[in-house]
Amino acid sequence: MTTLLPRRMAAASPRASLARGEGGRATLLLSPTFLVLGLVVAYPLLSALHQSLYSTGGGLDADGFVVEGDIFVGLRNYAEIFAGAQSGRFYNALGNTTFFTFVSVALETVIGVLFAVAMNRAFRGRAFLRAAILVPWAVPTAVSGLLWRWIFQSDGIANELLGTQVLWTAEGFAAQAAVIVAEVWKTAPFIGLLVLAGMQVIPQEVYEAARLDGAGAWRTFRSITLPLVKPALLVAVLFRLLDALRMFDLPFVLIGPRKSSVETLSILAWEQSSQLQYGAASAFAIILLVYVAVIAFVFVRLLGADVFGERHPSRPRRTVRPKESAR
Image 1 (cartoon, one colour):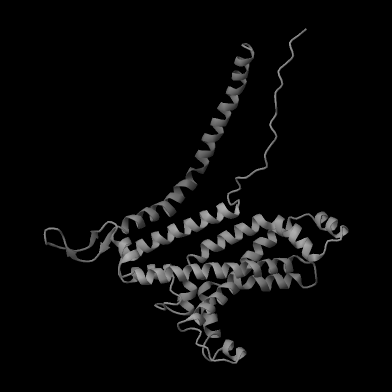
Image 2 (tube, rainbow, N blue to C red):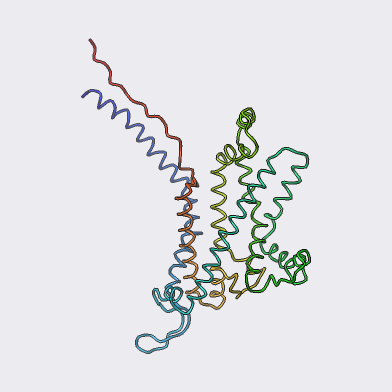
């Protein structure tokens, strides 16, 4: 035993040095990426956090002198948002953001999966169907908002088809329904595209075996397609959740600003910044960031979305048997 221990340590030392060398080389190669991420992500985040602790405008200091410019107010901007004059609009915008996110993403998930199933089938004209389904996703959001604003006008196509005179672009539930319809129309193809990519890698032998066992279309989809495509579907839903929580341009263009029924947290942050209240706007942005991070964390924990590819099948460990002593 005493002679085997130094040999094992000697054999392990080259491996450890090799691992350290590869780690240093990987850090060196990734350092430009880390630098760019620091400049693009970390610096604006820290700058917004710092700005949220200040208030723009004039005032009086502790000695009664007039102070112009940014004034340090600590957490006063956050207190105003949660329990001050801005609290009513904040909670309304928070409710609208949550409502738009979960309703639209739920509808997009169902419709996107149906799109993927349709695009995955082999039939004549499949290429045209794929192009037609993916066109709405390629349209810029501002252009999509203008298009749907024309459709939802009082004398537009929507009222003409429904035979009603609904004011879709005014206040109320009709405006929320218009935003959800436009959002689902534009972004459901995104989920369909990712789910289709997951369905393309499923071996056909699995479907042939299910067909031989007498499984129908619904049983095959529920027992084979859906479990195998679940990782791609969860990642697509997570991306859509993060994107929908930051919804700004579609309700802003389709309905307009200062409409309480469609006002979101991003619209509130924009409005404060347009009024040169950069401290309050930064506070809204930081709160939205924290809210998005909490939703993403809960989603990953509850549904187990393998976003970063950290889960690998467990490898069997090799057991080293001690050598039998020579007889």
